[in-house]
Image 1: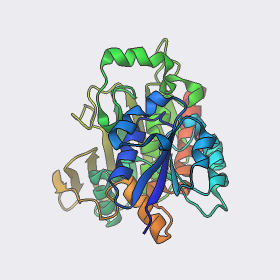
Image 2 (image 1 turned 180 degrees about the horizontal axis):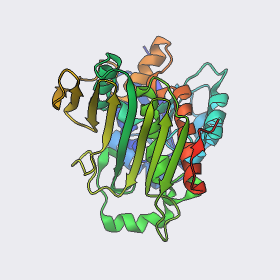
Image 3 (image 1 turned 90 degrees about the vertical axis):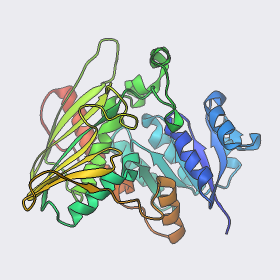
Image 4 (image 1 turned 30 degrees about the horizontal axis):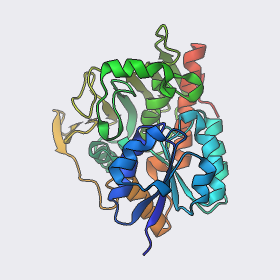
Length: 358
């Protein structure tokens, strides 16, 4: 069987290197092309995966003309997701978007509309979907271990988006400060800021955990740092029919959670009618309380299922089987989450509680 031909579009997001590694390691896929206007940003991937020069492009149209490709991985700045998806859709490719979904719900709908009728899928990847502790928590919730899920509390972030490259290669603090003024992560017009970067995780996986339920209203506040035009810390309270949930995002944690868990701990806490679950990022176990066993106790995490070890493995498997992607990768679910993020952002700027935006 021919291998899936994958093209990488834009290296704005450092996760492109991680995703190309997943493609490189997949026995049924190949890196058929990469594109970015700045050749320097592609050099690490070229070196790491021995990508030949005839598969490296600095012009989008030339890159796409060199296809055909089966799927495009999109790692552009958030504010460019809709425009790129609209340019990719006519090329008959599945479009795999690295989080966040979009800069707004309107732009997310543009992406969904662009892919409608193409016979190809739009998938939004949220890397926390592939964290064993959160997958285990989802199973336990669905099995009814803690009764009806009423609240989802989320705290997550890292030292900042410029502190690491692909494969979590660390960047020095001095280099981070040098890069900040020109980085799209710190520009509002490009979709920068911790709220757009990380609250989508809590909103998207939270919607997944809550079986698709949406909050009635959202109240959010953000920090305002002199000289920085985007937020680096955001806290939103979402009022659901079942109670209050909190989603907090932070650029500036003491440590990165994939090296040393900071305090507060990054991850999720779930409150049900009959118990609670604590699910830290990257943990070897989840911590549980139930009415039958109210003392805290640990449950070892489940290994990820075959075919769901990472995002590329899962999405290519769905495509091969003719199945739609599901859970946090499903654009319909992600649109609900984008509406939560939109409402939080508007609430922070208007300094008031708002009903969930349409």
